[in-house]
Amino acid sequence: MSVKSIYPRTGLKGEITIPGDKSISHRSIMFGAIARGTTKITNFLKGADCLSTIACFRSMGIRITEDTGSIIVHGQGLRGLSAPRGTLDVGNSGTTTRLMSGILSGQSFSSVMSGDESLNSRPMGRIIKPLTAMGAQIASVHGNNCAPLKITPGKLHGIHYQSPVASAQVKSAVLLAGLYADGETSVTEPALSRNHTELMLRSFGADISSKLHEDGSATARIQPCRELYGQMIQVPGDISSAAYFIASGLLIPGSELLIRNVGTNPTRAGILKVCEAMGADITYLNSKNTDSRAGEPTADILVRYSRLHGTVIGGSLIPALIDEIPVIAVMAACANGTTVIKDAAELKVKETNRIDTVTENLRAMGADITPTDDGMIIEGGTDLRGARIKSRLDHRIAMAFAIAGLIAGGETVIEDSQCVDVSYPEFFATLNSI
Ligand code: S3P
Image (cartoon, rainbow, N blue to C red; front, side, top):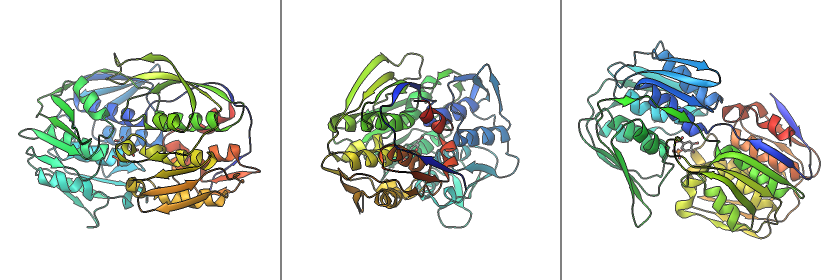
């Protein structure tokens, strides 16, 4: 087991650049592979999850090369994939599994996807159900609604799917299958989840539209497609990775950090709203709009140490910060007063059950936290003490508690610290550089 020791720090200063967004990096490979012509991707995230996506498409005959730091995907068109050599290994990546299942459902060959122990225990019924309704032949090999998943050729037709969860992975799986269907496909979700698929597919030439309804629900529609066309993609920095440095700048007295090139798509930037509600001192510099970034805005974020106070987080804000809840919980433990996180039952089906893993580790550090059925209640203001952190191979738990270790008294040890490679291989090196 790899472990990392973290010690308390003061006055973090400096400038950091955040690596590419994981969600956008996955999509750029997938859409590039099924587009005609080449797709050039700059600032691609070489995290383990995105490398799993590359390996899967290489195994389906797509040439993916590197040229002076950019990734080049030599797309073969909507029907240009070939039968994979053996089982597609999706590693730890839910995004690879769920989005690819939409694409694979439209192919004329059979495939099997399987991942690691965590991945193979995550719920896949949420994609099996709508894809089956579209005519896809997709089955859980062990009949437990989990991967391995086997997909055989099927004829797809458009459906309207009312999704019970606000999940970009579910929405994207259905929309991608919709490229291969014989009529319009639409998905309504209870709140708007990240919209990278809609923005990027449109830039590749798909006929796709989206609408936010008055009650906060949202519908995306896609028409069947003859061909997508390769694009230049500039991947913005991942706000989910920036979140750890935003938190460290806010929590550690005397800090001032400039975090460059952060994606600020409102469907992802919920953490910035929470920081504001907690009284954070954050300045946005150099805001860039969406040109040449497949509809994705970016900004540099200047963070200064702030005395934070508790807040209530719930409703339609949850999908915009779901991956940041572990580090938000750390911020809440250090803030004055109570923080309530609700409407976040999806935390239970991430790489770990994050209600449990956050509770277990915050308690080990002496924080006052009560898990609930759809979130947690944190009484802030207790001094954290260093502890042995069980990451349980969950990258976001490892990174959130590394930040907690910078504020806690004494030594904090992060177990299985190498799991940060899933989304942020340079995390510990960047932490040491400030
Ligand atoms: C992702 C969607 C989210 C998120 C995950 C990445 C994506 O999952 O938690 O890290 O790239 O579409 P859900 O769709 O399960 O909410």
